[in-house]
Image (cartoon, rainbow, N blue to C red; front, side, top):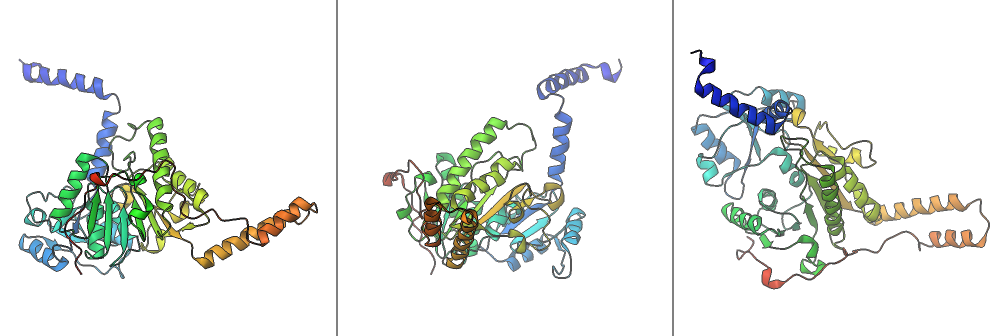
Length: 402
């Protein structure tokens, strides 16, 4: 009997037919996209709360890894991308932008590595490190991580702060909250207070003086998902509505001077459109920071169809060799910014009314010149905000290192 007609082959063909029927005609395209994601290198962040870069590299050398040295001031970003695309199985190098990040060949496993087991290294894609790296946080800062679980971003924030200052991390899902607490403990984080709490129900006076807020809300995950078409437009619309609400609430904190908004989505509805909606409501208080200035030779930014696009940052999986991400950085306007904005508004009003002589137009122009038209009240709370139940509040017992 020919091999193709034997019973095992026939059974396999039968299952193949069933799989193809369920998966549909796009299965080959889906697997092709999966292979493209697999070509991304393995990124490993050194946990500076547990060890140092030198110690990690010494341990890696003892395991047979070869470190590729280069001078980022002499090499271009294109040179770097070419190197990581052609690494052999025993080499690694430091990331071009994020100093705590090491880059290994695709699919390198670390689950059994002593460095991973001791929490000296954290498996974290470059894209998810960028929101923290692009922020302005410094030792001693007061920070809120509004959507904290599972905790990689939170622990990176604590690492940048060197466990000084104070970070409040909120997560409302019970299972994810348990993971957050566990990972922060394992990674040596001591400057974080965790709350099993909806961030939008956190009153402003619960954390007075907060300076920085990170908003990384639930999204379609289309930047990391191998199945590009599985999220419906209705779902994206619903997610965008939620994303706008949580971003607006972050901007409403009267003391906050910087809000970092990020998603792992490629859809403009969850990114540029959310940012523009927030700017429409808080334009008088916040402006966008141009993120390209901190990432040397970066290639990908927001969709230029939107006015905010050129100041936002995107990652392109096929070019930047990391997951698809979007980042926008809101910074509070200083007095000089506000004066200029108000002056520009008044000039526009003056031009608008210069050809009109009726008393109503004259009164509006006088109000503008007197500074009575123009600024929304600071610290508008999101509607429906409720005080939190202190019985459901969880605080970490460890104190910050002085």
